[in-house]
Figure 1 (tube, rainbow, N blue to C red):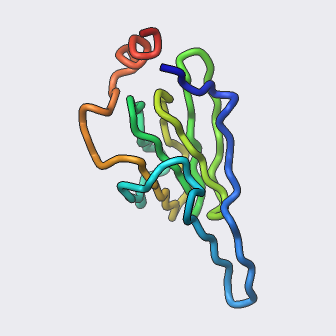
Figure 2 (cartoon, one colour; figure 1 turned 30 degrees about the vertical axis):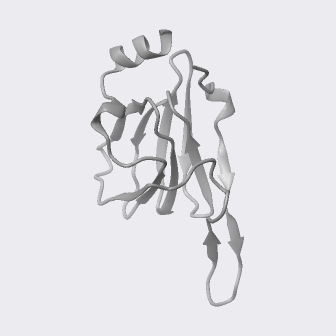
Length: 137
């Protein structure tokens, strides 16, 4: 199985329609390389807390900072990269086999996640040592 490397992951522009009454961003059609099966969002995260701390065997996720900002620390088993999400018209596509941690949430930050799969505990790799074994197999 081939997994993306950390250098392949970066922010993706989401269509933004500018209007004096307010902006509108749209995700539709084949914008994502998968069908959206689950939508959830994180909010009221204390600034000193972190979320994530896992990887997925099959599931892909697209993260958007709808409000505020937070950092996503990505790890492909060999290299790490930190990306700040702080604009609602930019998102981060995280492919399978990438460890992620979300941290440094600003006050009022909201993280929207568009997932390729429904919740399935067996798809999660929650221990970093297990992630390293998964990557080496």
